[in-house]
Length: 281
Image 1 (spheres, helix red, strand yellow):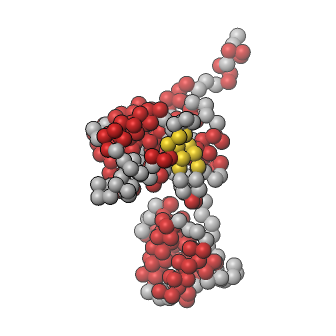
Image 2 (tube, helix red, strand yellow):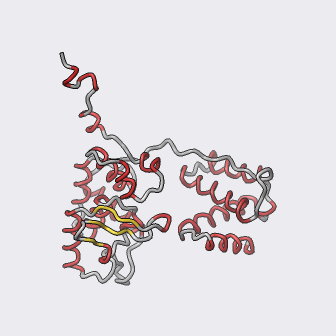
Image 3 (cartoon, helix red, strand yellow):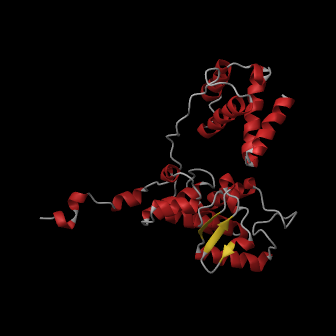
């Protein structure tokens, strides 16, 4: 599918797709080709839908992964091959009903304090303290720190959008200590091979899992859990959802709403309106 691949890549470049999206779409197309071993241009809508049913019911891929497959095939047949709606149609997929896990504040603190390595502690503190995606956390630069406003500039986050988010005083103190020890030149979390390159996402995940083992904190997901905790804990403190949405870099309010967990401790503090003092006898 070399010619078709180039057409798809060209269309994605023109639309400014992120590198990870390009990689994920190409992988989805390769999987479809491997299933039928035929030119994708010749596949019918029914055949594409049969493969999607395969990845859902037989391969049992994660909800988010299946959604990428759906999007990739819509893009191919509707945007690149220009199939008419009556010839090709993939039904829309709703949002997953699975809620991301969340830790309480004490567990988060134990997790952050667990690593002996200052760089590892700082990475976890920045991820939680500023509500960063792991891909954003590994790319925190010296130039991104705004001490005066206690804000962090996130450059080219998801969707190629820049934003500002809150900077934790404790995380800033750790960054300063890290700077004294490591003297970073650009990225705080640089690789040992090249001080001008940030560590990879996989390394950050490994840091998180090592901290889990050391701290004994229960496992409810990967390092992205710290971002969920950031939003949830802010909500519990009374921060309005619009501010949280802006700090997290969401385009839709409904996306922020999915992060709004209410922990058992918070629920225990909530009283029925019937028990309000004004309603007391």
